[in-house]
Image 1 (cartoon, one colour):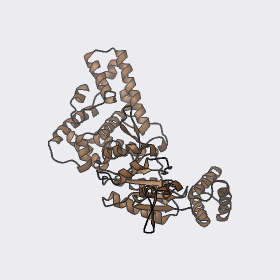
Image 2: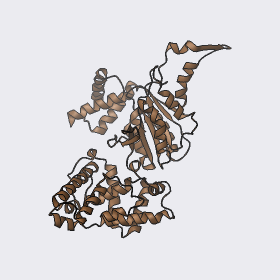
Image 3: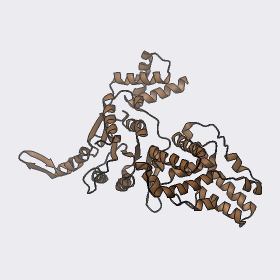
Image 4: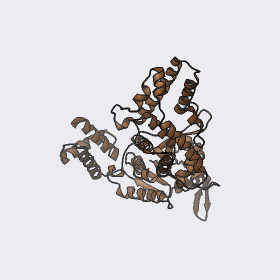
Length: 435
């Protein structure tokens, strides 16, 4: 096994702590006789536990070793895989080296574990070649990732040689991309111990669609039109969704990502204290073959906060043009985002009857950098009742319309007033009673 791993060129930058690297070292020591049977068994079981943990995290089934190798190929970002993501496979000398690697990976796919099982008196490799996972809910793992990995694993099992591997893997890169961006819809960011930028996949993103948001048809159309233009490579604007709390602003953004995920749309959620990292985030994704929405939820600034200056510089006005594959979508309960005070008028100037405050103009200029602003206002009582009835019927609540209205009216009086969120919470309450 270690000899095949040593042949890797494009995919050869392997983390020494990875399962593949550690398995190679185990088989090296087994073949050279440099470790006792007990130590080898212990090391094998350690890697076996890691394989089982990976299978649990991603809902893998059948041949876990094959799934792991498919996952390795899917997540390996290198010049070859990144080029295939953008342009697909093309003629070039690099294909020779890639096929060399695929030949080695095919040998790993077909590796015969029976010799080490007989020598050590173990059977774990046999069991993971036909693994049956415990049935569990989809919410326990990322079904999207699981299905893609297992589909590629099955294709690779059926490939006759490295050419079959080449076609299957490069086709996957072209269709879905490589690395975490190819497998996940949404991400958060953090920093590692050295201060470097790290993207963390959001595996439990709400599976809401725009049809789940009752009403607000004009608002949804504006959002869809702008996003569709964006994913189609046309000119599009940054978007600010503002208005009353609980009206569906955040839900609309999540839904738009779900709607256009298959078209290459991804979302990166970033918080106010992370605005200093905005330039690094953009630099990390600007050359990828995806469209990215940088999402800022509940965006607002107090008068003493200056993070909005980072945002202004990134949206527009810097030396480097914002890449075409990045837009900023933000939600806020404030129309103007930044709290205004009477002291902002202290630098007021009068010129031919016009009054101008530099401080106020600077604060208001942030909103002007969102080309599309969409107002989500509180629904009327009739609209509130319509939302309740629609959600209740979809949930199978067996209450008459008049009774629903009466109970919904009582609910909103003691639960935050009229809003789409209040309606949804009321229906959740009813589901708890009737289910």
